[in-house]
Image 1 (cartoon, rainbow, N blue to C red):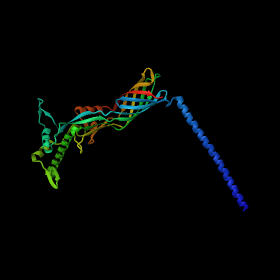
Image 2 (cartoon, helix red, strand yellow):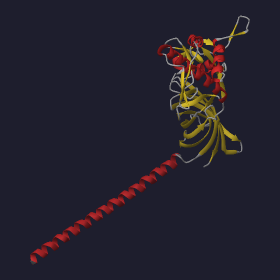
Image 3 (cartoon, rainbow, N blue to C red):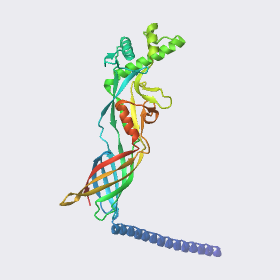
Image 4 (cartoon, rainbow, N blue to C red):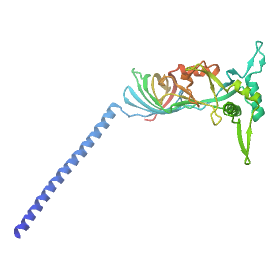
Length: 355
């Protein structure tokens, strides 16, 4: 029994000694790690101070072709500065007009002397007003506006000793949609009329094939069928669909008529890549001769859209890629956007040095 007690006591003593050794080793290891960490942080801090990395802060307001914005900047090298900011384009509006066309014929026709003559549109418009009470204008107004807003990350490199000139590279990032156009409130009556007429056209076409009435309604439990006389049906079928002539489809050569959607709306959305690289240059200096903490600078460069921007209508047609021979102001806008694979950037920046 005595031998057993002595054996147990000896085992406990050995375990306690081993645990103590491990604790001492662990403590030494933690102390070493802590000292190493302190040494590393101190080294990094000293290095940043010595090299001037993130030792200053500039805050700027900007205005230019990409909108109005704000950014912050700090140097990471004597000749290199990082900028991070946000820009927002004010929502100013511009009217765009789409002419109405019926069966490939413009809504307004003129003779050789410039006198207005009756067109298919005029005849159908009178019929439509008789049936529905709605009149259709010869053109619809769409309201276009920019929707651009982007975050930006830029790197300025100052190649000269005076630090006035800089070369800039970086990127803008934001929503792919940068502009949109929606029909005006005044155009909604015309769009409703066009939608009703095209519904008539489809139903007359179906009636000629299936014998179904143009429209069936149930009022107070009683069915009512709207039917057109043969002359009216022939007029509708002969003249064809009503829509807003935009241009010709590239794949078939047929006219592209934009028609209102099921909600009686017409929309166009301009899109590019969300990620847009930037390359440019600029010049800056003191805003006030007596103050070193206020500067002004001017930048010029290019934002790369990533190819030709898309103009997508509500029916999925891409006006810059699927349609050609677009006339009028609409064609001018489409040609302008289709010709630019980069967006010109011009801006002025007012900067206050915080520290």
